[in-house]
Structures are given as structure tokens and as C-alpha cells.
Length: 151
Image (cartoon, rainbow, N blue to C red; front, side, top):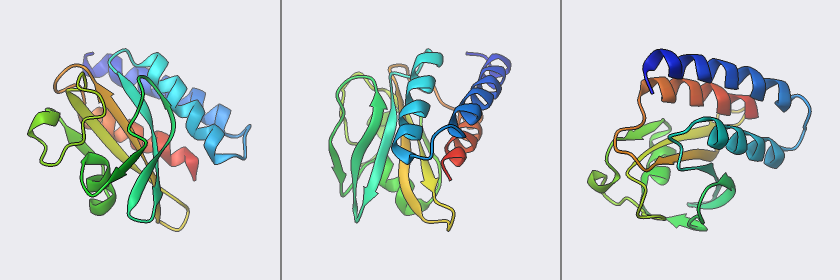
């Protein structure tokens, strides 16, 4: 998807999601709504969902797509995002040391940390694509804004 089209779509999705977020006080339902909208509106999203932080591991939360790894421990892009406290874009998952392959069809990935109102990471948004190099700074910027609606 070209940058202009991607930018416009994210702006529309942000407005739609922001409107829906005010209608629910429940964090899980908000995560489910975000995952469903992004998965169904972004054609290059193969898997889209949340992993919730539980001590030193991540436990799968609301998601859309094929079956997910239930628990992530010790390595992987999602835990690297938590440790580094930043969004991580991986153009080729096979070149990421310690990548956890929940589905072999996934070729690229972006992981965005979810911060609470105190700045503590509570979860990550994980998005996979079946195409290499699907994600860029535009995705990172807008997905960070969207997960910011969870606080």
C-alpha cells in the first residue's frame, strides 16, 4: 500500500476507533475492538492482536487471525519491544535473533508497546504480515496513536 493511501486509512481508522473507545470502560473489549478493526481494514495484516504482560512473560489477549502462541517467554520480538520500551519493525522475521514463529506464514512484523497512564508497559500490539517488509514508520506512528487510546 502506498504511503498516501496508508496514511489516509489510518486517519479514518483512528477516528473510528476513538469513537468506539468512549463507549466501553473495559480494557479487554477495547483491545478486541482495535484488533478486529485493524485486522479487517488493513489488507496486509495477517495476524493482529495483543499480548498482555504477566511478570516476565506475555500471555495472548484479544486477537484476529490464525491460532496464536499462548505464552511468549525469554525471547522474540514482543519481549524485545517490552525490554526496549519501543516499537520494533521487523522487515524479515527470519533475520530477527530469537524470533518466535507462531505461524510459519508470517514474514514481517511490527510490535507496539501499550503503556498505562503511569508509563508502565501493560501489553503489546503485535501485527504480522505474510509479505516481507510490510511495515514502516507510517504504521509505527499510527499504531502507537491507536494503542494510546487504551490509556
